[in-house]
View 1 (cartoon, rainbow, N blue to C red):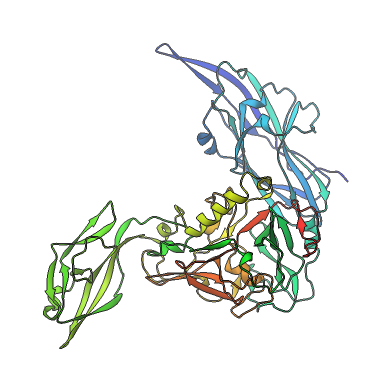
View 2 (spheres, rainbow, N blue to C red):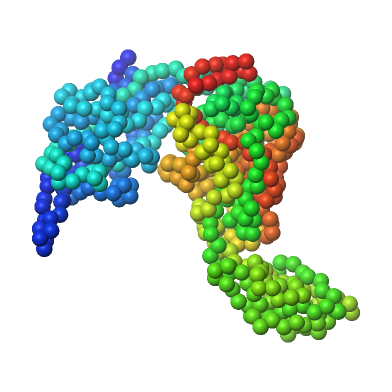
Length: 586
């Protein structure tokens, strides 16, 4: 069954390229006039009648264009569109750029950028058969599979390669093209998994806003449920599942869910097979702190912002108790070293504690018997209370830190756990035969503030401070949705497509606030999740899976287990049935 996939169609036309020589003080400059525009027609060929092309925006219309650098090319406004599969079966498709009759410009002179990925010459893409009558060449830019209900967004930018010169055969040439979508119905392991969706009422309910109403833990049975994510409908495993085993890249994994774009989300499960309920250190790749930099709200981030200014607590922080017989150093002013970012007292004086009175409110101290010059924090005296033997000094802290929530949550620095995961990816996946199967998807480090200021050393609670009554597979803040290339729904800050589960994913998989040693994520170890809990003014608390299978939390500076999460292409797994005896594999 063949038909085109949509009535609205687009034409990509690269207009006549003409060479203009500009003479100035005896020097010649090459200048190409380059016109590239979309018309109102686009050709799409599909074996699935309901594969739809939509959201076509930002038609490329470039004039007076000459060879430019990759950095300049990335700044061009791309042509964007969305593919959606509204069929009940998967669609295998390709996005092709077809050069129409009359094209005389060689494709080796054009750079192509798809979805903010790698930049390649158009001529480097695989050739495929032409569809439009008279077309002279067709190149496949992308091939993928869309599962039922899934959508995929695309952005396309094209420009003249920076290395094109006057000696190349590129002047007075014509390039005309169309984007062609070629698709055919297919069946994948993902289709077989989705067909197992539980329909008898065991699954948690989803409200109209897309939140999953918080369920209890699941320790008795295993099944497949669904909930929305930003890409479509996600299908997640829950409970004592025994048919979600995968063997990939020399390791065993468990499928957590089928993402809304059809990709397959995996969590590491060891070098050997493990049954549900089995406690084993083998089910993690090692241990790491989440973040050793715990002196600011920024430290709750998978990535985090730099410190930028000197701050003091917004209100009273705590109290020192000093013996009236001891002398402490105080000063009216302090010195801050811009290089070391350390504080020292300016012209400090040693004063007997028993002689302190309200005249010294507003002075600074290091809470020390000596005037150290290497202090991360100073203490500003806010109240003095003296009795016969001791004096209580109330204070605010003075420190160097972030000055806004936005600054704290700027993705400038890698956390320790991110560096650990990136290192594992470099050593085990990058550059190997398995790299081609791993795709981009969101890892959510939900830093949504529920109380507090969210910066500096201010006490701040985040969404997972308590067991959420509303679970979700979307990420509340795009800045927290970590991706490599996706900048429509994600933040594009990842180096590699690897991360951790969120607390929401853990709970939906069958976890809860109570112990559960039966569901498939249990390992007998505390292992980091990606969700922050709170900053206590002196420590960072992050969510994790407790060693008894419950949802717990721990100080970010403590070392705990790491279980990598990857996403595979929807058609990556070809064989197996997901059981321990026959895991899915490529």
